[in-house]
Image (tube, rainbow, N blue to C red):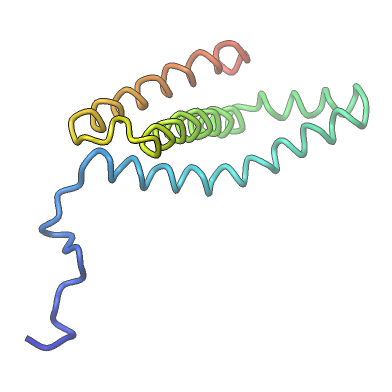
Length: 127
């Protein structure tokens, strides 16, 4: 077999994704995506500094339905990234490294981040 015909390692047709690998990829994606949330935060701070009228315009913009969906997913990405970062700190300390406990903690992170997102969205009046 020539070098060009060799499969890329790990071969995606053979490799079975695990919860830890999927959550690791999601952690990287949410970390990158949260950089775009900075634009929304900067708009918020700018609206605060320009007075009540500008802030009211910003609040009306935030409660526009497509923007509410973006804010919802931003909260989801932030809560997931934060909780998964805490999980990585536990791993750095040597806790929950075994396959079973890492998988259980991964599912727990997903459940807690979804619950936290729902709670914050209701608290902020998005839904």
